[in-house]
Image 1 (cartoon, rainbow, N blue to C red):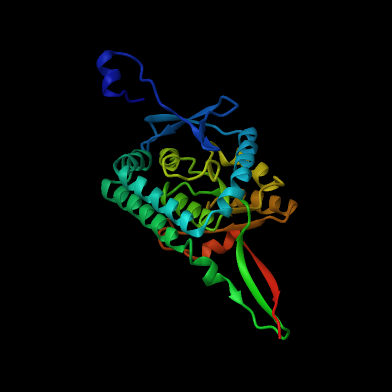
Image 2: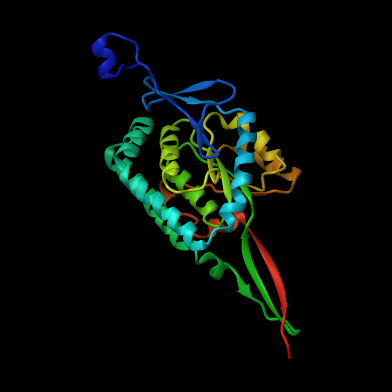
Length: 297
């Protein structure tokens, strides 16, 4: 393990940062007390320790997400858009730190890391713009042969689990999370296993972006520890999977049958995450309600 300049100068062991998870607006350690090393792209240097989330941590995150759902889904579209735009502003302010995390974790050069952060900022602004438009685009006024107005309009589905791929480590997370929460859902995120540091730094950005506590919850660790519980949990309404792992896909797909929760899988080449799927991915986590309103003759 490479030492920091301070540790090397003083001839002592390096004290590694333990990155906490983000649940219910608070930074927490796993109740299990377990941690995993966040290893650099060279496979040798340990950059930090990250918490290994347990099933209990996941259940706590579901409670936090459900509690936040009512408030978040009830906010005006204008306010949701403002908060997403504020998140983009805060990410822009900390772009240098995020680029460094991406370079150290994944081994990409400075240009690629700068492009990934810029893409993430653009995605947040993009979905902020959709906050007051998706209802009009996806909703409809339906022709009926009776004296009624007939409207179909989209509503948030509830608590969503978002599973991110290992690479890229950051843009898929931002893309999937933004598409999920802009419509009023709350979510629990499983970030990259091999490069979790960008996601855990993003927690700090979310905490300063006026996003209500519990709307986004991020659990680091191993997806295999959490996937069976996520798939069968009766208070999870949908799962959006961006990971290429076929065994994980099978576990999630089969488990979702327990309460007929929505399941969407997105298989996207690493270089296409910036452009793929938008705005159609918002359809993964919305329900359509049809209302009849009588009119007089």
